[in-house]
Image (cartoon, rainbow, N blue to C red):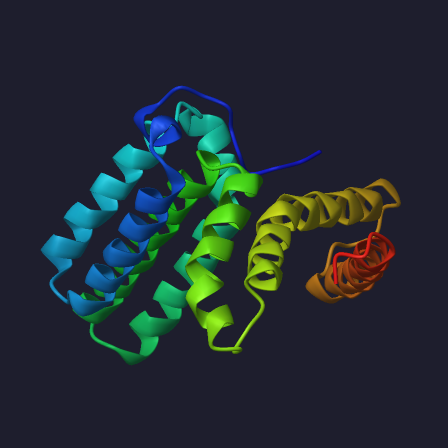
Length: 198
């Protein structure tokens, strides 16, 4: 089973899930409240050190984050076309810090712990009849669980194109990826219904 979680004994691994997610929420608020490049640059460095402390290693660690880095680079270049360079730098540091911090948390927190904590956090809303806490926890857990699955499926489709000598184009990759992902989602929904979770 592919998962974002990495087994280890780092400080983040030993830390309880609730303070980790709470700290990530506070860190995210700070990132979007701050606007000085120096503060955001230091935040990105701190997040990078936290990610490195998970013990994943730089080479596999960067490989896991390559799609996110490409997206951030594209957003930064787009911002550079319409905004001053200092604003583009702020966006680069802010998104990089947020991505690295989130990656550090997901690498050191099991899916079960995520589900339990999100369910616990949503319990007050359930008391008011707004949501079902278990559904929120399950949804978040499924999203985290299947991020690496979608990435693996994308690579498989890309490799199949290359093996057949076909030119790799975004459209020819995205369409079968969406179809396979939706099919997999239907299978998961059927399995959930069959087990009487809802």
